[in-house]
Length: 344
Image (cartoon, rainbow, N blue to C red; front, side, top):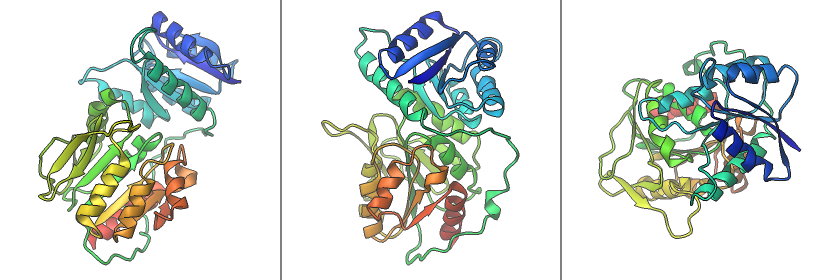
């Protein structure tokens, strides 16, 4: 059985999450806490396999609670929040910096048209995160990634664009990559992150707050600019047309993931050939792997995140199986290679 602790200041939310989780025979809720202080007290005598955590709570909020958990009682934490305020959304992602593994919207009430889908996603995420091994966080300043020796890569053509795709476990790695790029980075970057649509704006704002380059949600028809990272909006596939402008299109009938990483990678392979870098990061499933193979076949430089650094080694593993990734690297290696090849 997967033991779950629910932390939320709303009694209605606690009851709903408990109802959703305990409907699955493999999950049992071992406790509920109304705030961070109560959650930390529970952890003194109970050991859950997963914690669902709200962010905005009185007293000790979700960010501080997650930080304390990861330094004192490491347990996989999933942020489950209803906050959709554009001014505060980015605060949800600070919990990822503190060690949370994923962020999801709270499921709507029973009877809502999206209840079944959101409930299934929450249950699936709890099961996946229960298998992730977390360790005590020390939060010591890391050695500058810019000082890491680059991995040598054959590069027959100058780089004109970088495409990045990720799912579960990807946001914090995307942040580390973009935050390591200097002012004046000479090429644009395109980012597809599997995430609930309502969190994309906050995700982009959170990234922008820690980067020297510009980060923004992509807009239909805008021309790509060097030194800018374009995040795909929720529910739209992102690509580039023949004039170097962003194209945003609805997914195909029956398409499970939109935006799709593979859609971006296939498009970049067609438009840029060997003048591109494709990077596939942590995530479950196989999205991105076939597209990365197409990029490689067209001469692009292709990279997958390594298993040891992934929260979920699903998408990169599929890329490795397809022999789509020329290099399999941890985040610091990805950054060092990216800086080296773009500079060249």
